[in-house]
Amino acid sequence: MIKGSIWVLLLGIFSLAISCDNKNQDKNKTAIARVYDKYLYKEDLAGVIQSGLSPADSVNKVKSFIDFWVKRQAMTKTAELNLVEEQKDVTKELENYRMDLLIFRYKQKFIEQNLDTVVTEKQINTFYTDHEAEFKLAQPAVKATFIKIIKTTPNISMVKSLYRSVREKDMVQISDYCKAQSASYKNFNDEWIYFKDLIIEIPVRVDDQETFLKTNNYIEAQDSVYAYLVNITNYRLKDAVSPLVFVEGNIQGIILNQRKQALIDELENNIYYNMLDKQDIELFGNK
Image (cartoon, rainbow, N blue to C red):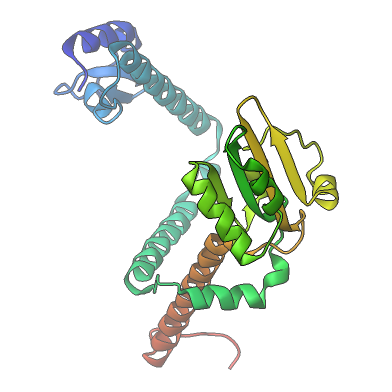
């Protein structure tokens, strides 16, 4: 709600917009602006101001709205004065818009009432398998093991000698050791991650991800405190088939959109044929 002082300021600013020709003015309301015989009232601005705005922001918000209203009314009046009657007749356009709006709202209501929004993991996997080639990676992705460990950690040489191994017992040994030493150990061998999300953790510069992945299976780097060890066990380059993990959300959306379209198609056909059967629709074409 705009405080009284702000309204006084606004009324002072825009009072000059109100002329003496006020025969169409509602005397029970406070006029803010006029364009020919169209009036904007203080009461029309009730929904313009959002709570939490400062007095200055409130004033600017109202001024912007009034400016928009005045220009819109001025353009409308100018159009009315310069167009012939035939050009000003928008009856057909309004009726088409009304029909489109009613149809849209009914379809939305029908979908809300009838759409099955549950998409199972099996349905997602099936869709992915059937359309795998359509999903392309936007950037390189990898499977990898990532270790971040303090350089002075005891027996760090053991970690460096085993981190390249993919044997289960070696990976368990390194994982347990890292936990005991409060080191960071992340195993991404069972899931894909974007390569950029991995290298952002490492003090290494990679200008060309594709060339880097083609020529490096391992990364070893360090800063003043930590040693960083990465074993890249698999990778896919940009434009390769995207792993499912990156497109699950897209697939769910596609499946839901397909269901929506199927519902709408069924709705339209049912309405059409039901009205034909009841003779509520007649086609006066060739017989």
